[in-house]
Amino acid sequence: MPNSSKEVHNRTYKAEDFFGSLVPGRECGECTVCCVELKIDTPEIAKEPGIPCEYKTDTGCGIYETRFPVCRGWHCIWKYADDMPDEARPDRLGVMFGLAQQQEPDNVFEVCYIHAVAFGGSEALENDVTIEQLNNITRTNLPIWAATSTDAKYLIHPKEEIAQVILEPEKQHKFTHKIAAKYWTTGLKKNEISFKTRIGAIFKD
Ligand code: SF4
Ligand code: SF4
Image 1 (cartoon, protein in one colour):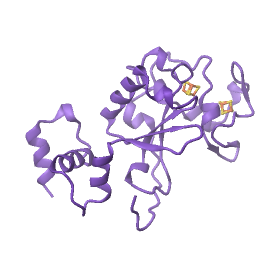
Image 2 (cartoon, rainbow, N blue to C red):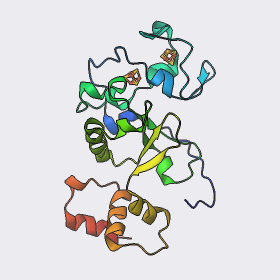
Image 3 (cartoon, rainbow, N blue to C red):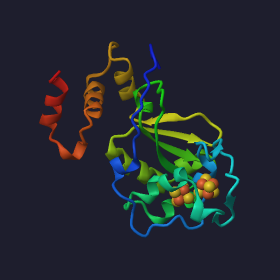
């Protein structure tokens, strides 16, 4: 993916900005997936992704009452999205959806995105419940990257042809892909605007 210079993004994005508040009463229960799968890099605690936190126990956080600010402030998307069913809790689904961002993104799709981590293997990305959650998340218009614990992340939304229009606008692209790309970059949601409005947005520049 082409990139002539790296931009630094200092803005911090929050899951609340896209998913609203936490679902009342929705608890992590026995799930401790984020205590293993996330990279943490703060003065109080630091660990690499895929490595269990030293305070994690079989039943949850061993220092729950005094856990660190970074732990109190981060929640996976399952904690926010009330349309996600119980079986989509990360330890049950095999996939953890989280809001992520790169301080020095390689491209626009890394500025703020959904990171879907299939920590037990990529099969979990293909089951029906996961696909349903992915479809629902596309309503936010956020890019979605999928990864396993060991593999690099891959952009799975928007689809490649549309991503290429955005990354390489000077090249030849199908008209329908250009429409879709413009529609994606304007952040307009498919079900909320008419086709006429969409076309208007495409040609307004
Ligand atoms: S992955 Fe989600 S449900 Fe699991 S412990 Fe972390 S915040 Fe809770
Ligand atoms: S301190 Fe507790 S909540 Fe924070 S990562 Fe470790 S086990 Fe999880």
